Length: 259
Image (cartoon, rainbow, N blue to C red):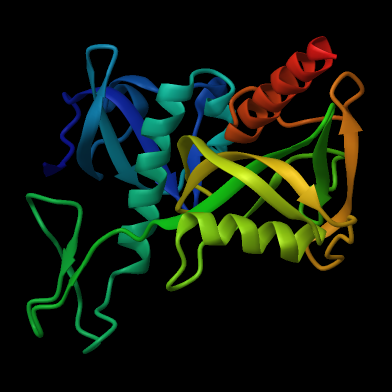
């Protein structure tokens, strides 16, 4: 549902543009549109949270625009809902005009899509599938420091699925490209929507098979084996990477007890 706000509408407000979300006082706003000076803007109902409607408003506020990561630290389910809003806001921003004929697009009423009435082309939000994998070698885990992580965080390997690949093929290829090793015993664990900007992370665990680490300097600052009880700085508990690390650590502990 899309409507122009008159002020009496109530709920949670995801005000987002350019992959940022409005968080006055660090929290997602709750209340009437008038109480947050949102009247006159166009809003969309995108869900429900704690018994209240969740509205999306595509707008950039003058201040307090943050990365949705701040919500991830509060509640994973709320982060997933905010992530939906951020991705939809970016989708509508980037699909104002048809990529085939150049005419202006219209948003459909009954699904998340944009329609060109000139050539009848229909566009849906893009989702980029990615793999992420925790790799164990006896009582050690493979961790890497990515070029984009300049804050000392070490994490597991990840990468995007390429055209024509299965998820399993992507894991083996990415591990070989980034670290130079081969893996075995690959198994699926879980998935996580990741709105940076529109990914779906699919997590796996694997065991080391062979090879010496030769990290890709374009993607990684470093990569090495770390004993499970002596880890460097790792991602926060809101991430799929942290879950894979914790599950690998549990396997390492179990392996040590067997010996």
